[in-house]
Image 1: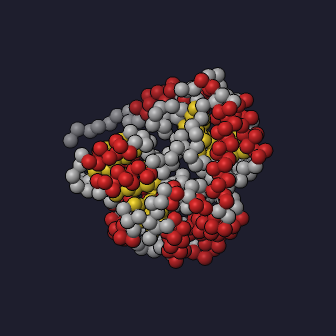
Image 2: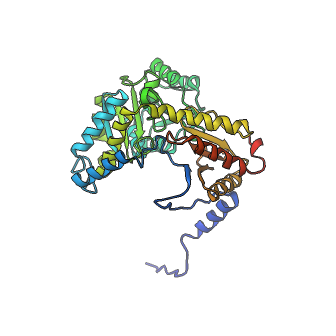
Image 3: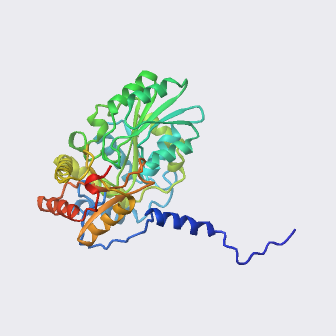
Length: 391
């Protein structure tokens, strides 16, 4: 056979061109490690209820690690399931109003598990255009026929479902992470029931914020525990920990245990994360007012920013999205905020499906009135030219 010897060939030379394109578009992303004692006021994380550093949450993590070890040691079906995992699953299901729950290593894995295990080549998956990337990836991996429908449009979803004969499911976020708007869950459920389809809802941004005492968006919509509804969620936002879960009828959960690849072939959630999530869940039960406070902070931020001329979507939960005139301007705006002590999220393409860049603010339940005022003043003071006229 001929020898191939190109010692100086760079098989990754194409990456240089891709990097240049990103730089020109203002879309370069970098890792920025934060110190344990960061002086920044945090409006960038997803710690909606302020529980990630709560003493009870930390104590739950420490106790679990001390008892069960640092890692799960294997997949859930081998050695990765502890009594603690079962306890967390039972309490999650009961709190959210579902028959059963299954804990996975992340919310991303939970969405992949639900979508891929509940569909196949003969299934139609109808997906809201604003859905999170984990749902999009679940649709791709499912090998099902996928139809993306206009954002928050139950009528379009109904028409699409009606065009298909056979098994179907509609998949949507409950609260969309870009603009913080809530999905029309009642309309989506009605469309599914008219056409005999299942409804799968990612409640990552609803748990702990919406519903009675933070029981989630499905609880708020009266859909909790319905035999045709499945919920996914994350333990890393309102519960301040790590991991994900799928909730639904017991037979659905049994099916996932036997078929969902992101459950079967992944190492189980670390005991410390399970212990922390369980401690936070119990704390939320005792202090349900945290959910209402998170929504109140979101309304305050939105009201003050829009009254000053900025363009921000009305928040339905705890996400406040402030539009920027360009990707580069959003990046600079976030950097300027950080330089004067405020950490905010910066969403740019491809993270935003509509191509419009934004600052994304987290309305945490533990923010004080002074901190809210400081955050608003900082955002206004650092706003780039054109921000008040953002599209």
